[in-house]
Length: 257
Image (cartoon, rainbow, N blue to C red; front, side, top):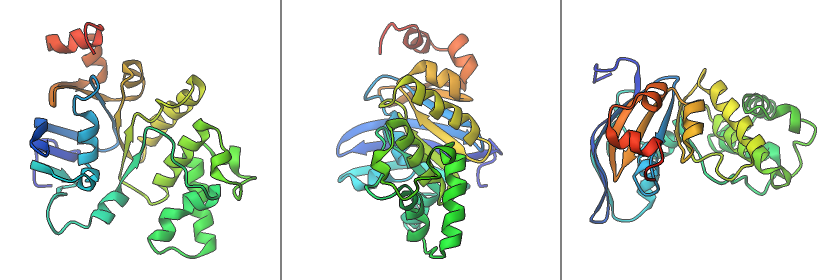
């Protein structure tokens, strides 16, 4: 690890600016995220939370005229180094999107898709990966008898857990979640939140959420974003009960946002 200020940090962001064309969407962001913790990004719409999430696996590379200034390291490696294999980066930093996006193929093939793409062809090995991933996503018992059915026939909450299983099947280190429950009903939301608590035993989870109660329930640490800057970062409990900054207090008490 090149930077020793937080020895347990798996993600280190230093003096980061991010531009869409000439627009500066992130301003001087510095943040450490530790292994095996759930870290929440909160703040009003358009404040930079999702932009930062997408910086962490270079999804913003897909948008023309974007630019990164500053340093982003994962496990001590600069992920914006020109020699970085972006496919490998996205294997180790998986993403779960706002809306469940299962492929219109079988449940089995959804989960096996990533391992197959990375060269695993053995049917028995694929079956083991699919079962393990679905178990980790708390979905195995619900789908084990219909693995050959289309994934699009699952409920919204099951589809989202399937997408989480699909990410886990390629053995990432980090799971990014962009508003993962915003399209789900309260019962499905609760199941995904319970799953997030389980996931941190094996993964680092970074979650963007508009729902402050959700951040309070699932995350260990929280960062509040406003206008592209981080206003405050702290243990979640501290940030919500004893904020240091007036803007944080105003946001969590509903004065704006």
